[in-house]
Amino acid sequence: MPERDFSDKSKPTLREQAEAHFGKQIDDTQQVEEKKPEYKPTRAPVDTNQDFLFQTPTKEVILPSGGAGLYPQIPEGKVTIKPIEQREIDILNTDHLVQKNLAFDKAIDSCIMSPKISTNMLISGDKVFLLFKIFELSKGTSKYEFTQICPSCRNKNMSEVDFDNIETTRIELEKNEFVIEELPICKRSITYHLLTGNERSEIDQKIRVIMNSTTASKLIDSTSTEVMNASIDEVSGVPAEYKKEFVKKLIYGDAVYIKEHMNKNTPGMNPVYMFDCVHCEYSGEILIPITSEFFSMKI
Ligand SMILES: [Zn+2]
Image 1 (cartoon, rainbow, N blue to C red):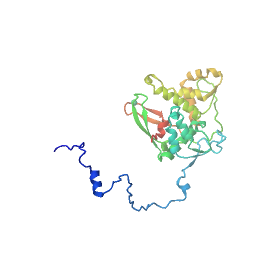
Image 2 (cartoon, helix red, strand yellow):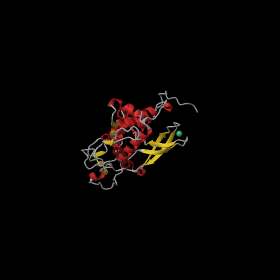
Image 3 (tube, rainbow, N blue to C red):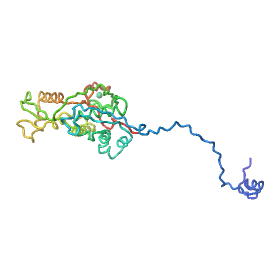
Image 4 (cartoon, helix red, strand yellow):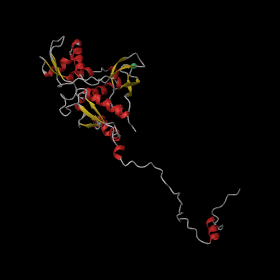
């Protein structure tokens, strides 16, 4: 078939042919009026009670410590919480807050409806209790799945805990100050306090950075020492500047005695679980990672 020569100006174009036929210039810029079908929406009648539609489900919980002795602003230990909503998801996804490790605490604090407190002022056991309750309210489940790096072989494991299986210890504290009259081995007396959320997060963060470093196989998890250093306020016969040295030299029997004393007086939830590595023989109690992974909502 021979190719058509479009440069041949002697032949009339289609438009010219059409114009010759209809006897007028065709105006192709003219808007064609579309006939739209008559549209009748079949929506359900609008509920005029909008307050009901957007009401946040809140929940009142009572802090395991009872509140009265520790926090003047929570005299009955009653705290009203709400679930994580879009506003908190935005906080969790805000990069500059994530980089400064502020996103998670800010999002959690935003879920405390009344009284207006920061969870970091609470003792760790009360804070963990609130975190788990907010988690359940937000996700509709008490099961938490996360990645755990084995402290022994450094391989990744998928772990799951059910917060319903973690016991809540309720101890009404009059004040956050405890005295051990005499330690079994060194015979000294000590005064200690239970760590606040702030103190505990600082330690966990410090340890996490150390343990996730590339040379971690040579490092030792010093959480226990860090907790002792931060909790013990006074040791009889030991000047304050030697307190760290005293902790470093604590003999096993005394360390266990202090730990048991603390556990006995700690209300709330202990965020630990039994971890069994699928890659090696390791088995032991590990801290449940309460990090941004807790509400992994990259949506
Ligand atoms: Zn392992």
